[in-house]
Length: 190
Image 1 (cartoon, rainbow, N blue to C red):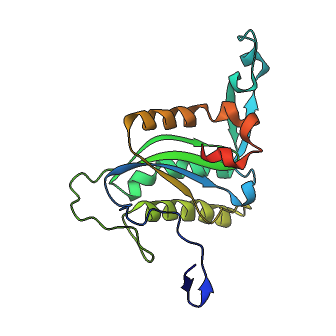
Image 2: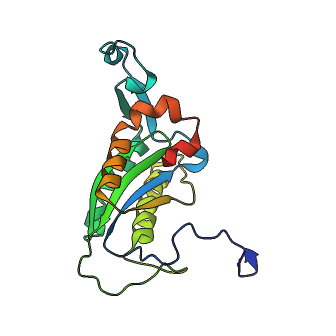
Image 3: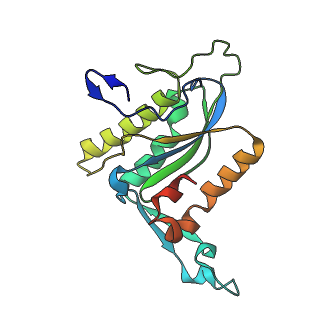
């Protein structure tokens, strides 16, 4: 493993040869530190499962009851295009201990390819997520709300219309699958 300033560092999770500021769709998952349920809770209604002859846990209709910081996380996500005009948002959801969203970096005329690199960055996926996480954390700190993000985030480059539709469905159905998946962190990333 490479060393940086004489200490070990974690290898980057991003693709080395990909330009994360280029025109494209990205599926993002950002978790809270130690999967703490800072954002709220998933609430199930018994009435919603009566319509099924053999109700399954994943067939219930769930709703989200967000905390103040959960509502801020949702609101700040929707404001990303105000700070990054080249961004368009697609499916998004706030869950008790993570968020999922699809970000479209809309730069069809960009011609210069700049592969992922270590160091200061702007106008790319890392700078978008950094700004978002910083904004939510700053609100929590100023408001005296205990809140911490996990240090990294997960991204997946969406490469086809079918994959985009599958991810949209996953995001939409995430609350209904919460009881099954909440204790399996590996499922948070599909």
